[in-house]
Image (cartoon, rainbow, N blue to C red):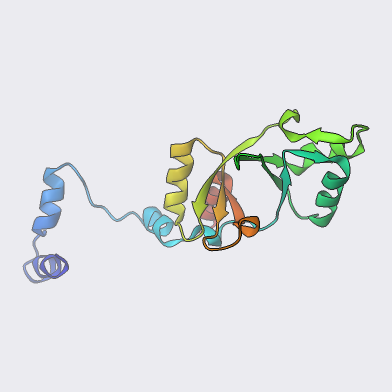
Amino acid sequence: IVIANITASELFRQRSIFHNQLDLLGLRFIPNPLSQLLDRTSVANVMTHAFASLPVTTTRQHLAKCLSEHPDANLILVVDHTNRSFLLERQALEPLVGQATEALDLLTVDTTKLITSEIREQATLKEALNTLDRSGANALCVTRTGTNPANRIAGLVTREQINTFLRTD
């Protein structure tokens, strides 16, 4: 197909039969620079490594320790017992450290929870946007394959990070 396409377009200055068939089917093949950038860029180039992870039920001391060990983490990944996860912003959790209650249920925190889905570390940004659209999630947990379950999540990527990347390139 490639040789026939090059021969038709360069030697005979004609559109190839492949492109003509796509046109007949109503499928236009127009290489879009933005689509090409999304197809060529890995999720690993955009994801943030600055996040902390907590279980749904935790203690005030564990929350304080987690926040102090990860001072640059603005997003906190919360994983429940069924391995479903969501993100909470650091600002919503910081006031909980000073509360008198010992046990904390992070599902009951009165703030916006970003729903997450998963994607492989090798995926492209186009795949990430498709996954965000399909799943209705706000963020993606970028996962490594072949690692132990404790270190499975390599990073996080949000639609906002992808949009920022596209605006800067």
